[in-house]
Image (cartoon, rainbow, N blue to C red; front, side, top):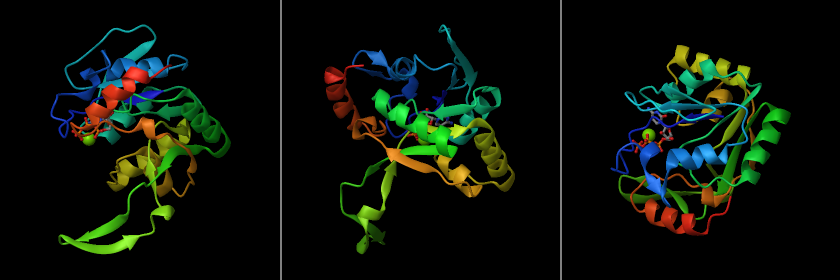
Length: 208
Ligand code: CTP
Ligand code: MG
């Protein structure tokens, strides 16, 4: 499991999310606990930090999420790797299992959820054309890939200057399909301050 955890959490404004506490433990600890079963756990941390945790390797992250993942990927050994955001503490085991299974079967897989709201284009501050929301999905992590495939995708992206917010896009840019599996709305990404209210509430009822 590769965990890009090197972001600075700018939109949240509470410092790096890896150290952010929810339900009395850091987001880093939430993620490490969710993957306690994984053969390998590699974590990218903000520059200047280093930690000691049994069975976990820590590496300095990069300027972007993509660079952090690439750094981890170079050190990974597993045949299939899962890439998970530290900003998503509430990962149900069933989601990870679905992703893993689909990644073994299809080479690449990502969990998605439906779009709950009406989806439109903002045209200079005015209500633009509606998008058919049933045709769209919100993409979560963990995403799973054959390690060689993901490495090839990252190398090509670096060569071509392609930057993406997740790994599936890079694999897709190679021309390789990415299978979709059912995600979980509880695996939302803690991004804005108000997300913390929901996270604290969820932490109270969460059972691993
Ligand atoms: N990430 C990373 N290295 C970076 C930037 C982001 O490893 N240089 C990681 C974050 O730690 C997070 C994931 O990528 O687990 C998704 O990023 P995001 O939710 O955007 O977190 P931040 O980049 O920390 O937040 P912001 O964009 O608001 O600064
Ligand atoms: Mg970011």
